[in-house]
Length: 447
Ligand SMILES: O=C(O)C1=C[C@@H](OP(=O)(O)O)[C@@H](O)[C@H](O)C1
Ligand SMILES: C=C(OP(=O)(O)O)C(=O)O
Image (tube, rainbow, N blue to C red; front, side, top):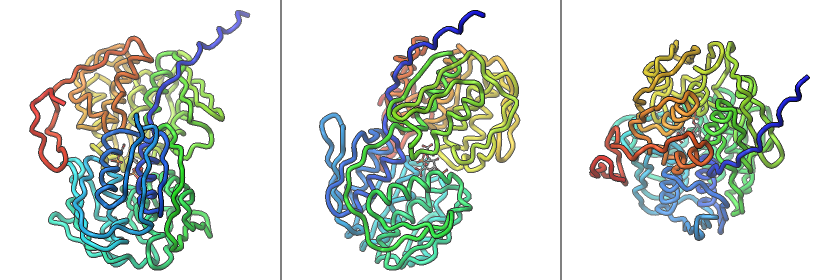
């Protein structure tokens, strides 16, 4: 028997910090009494907007040279006074900050980009109103939103979490600042791992959180304590690099991710393993090695980790049988209708896709060069960049630099790891961007 060749030495990928941990940590630090240190935060469009927002709400945010850490000083209670808060494109800002502000005293107005204004907010508004908040919106259920804050009562949280878990996460993080204990049932929520991340971080900031029965949470008043936190690399971001390794017979390792990660999206590597990649989840790093074969012929439930379903859909045409990715209806309410965007872009590449309300089935095929409509959605841009590399066909993204939402250096890191990768030119935007509350007036191609 010929011995199997030793796997190539892994290339170490530089994956920036988790968006979801960074934004939660900024809020919890702003709510805590004293100075918290957030090590290795994500520095991107979303988290910079979030940091600026908590600054507007009274927290002091200082960054160390080269952003090794951010020091955030909070007051130990909800915000006071008046503020206008710009949420940019960040769903987390629009869903986490209003309940926090409602626990304080004053008038707070939230707004965001056109993209964010189009995303749902009414389940959060209904729940906040039930807790005693006074809210105003010119367009029902959408940003802009004004909160007239005078504290929240607490009690039973009733939230429709079928479109997003972020409404519940925002309310849970506000709970220790409410007047009475809060009880919430998490069992019907989509994206459940994000709720577990919320509770984990609340506990690290000293909140009194109990789970009297599985999936039912009780939070007692008492506020937060400042702390120091090391932020993990972003597992959703790592999915693009892992998928590229799986589809190109490369070996990529991401230090800082491990079996104890609080990010559900790390489960993406299990999907890659089912498809035939070799996956090692260690104590200090996660490594994926492409084996030259991608298997299809099964269904995967992606409801808990829907930010990664586009990554898998993008390499699915290279599998040896159709792949069905299900449980993704709520991905229709994100930066774009992601189910429709994936289907249309794969079809533009000549790939057969069957779409239902809740799933896509991607058939094996030979992708052809195409113009990809990103819809200003960072994950569409990153997923189809991986397909271009893996299928060795040029993909022309209409807005390649929308990746700044979560991974400003994405194209450069891909080119460093995969010499065949072409860094896209800074092409004109597909749509006008909103910057700081003003319509972007820069000319096409400027950034
Ligand atoms: O709480 C969070 O940090 C997030 C929750 C998820 O949203 P949904 O709960 O809307 O699925 C995810 O898609 C988003 O990128 C981040
Ligand atoms: C859905 C996402 O972002 P947001 O936090 O804006 O919801 C995402 O990053 O994929």
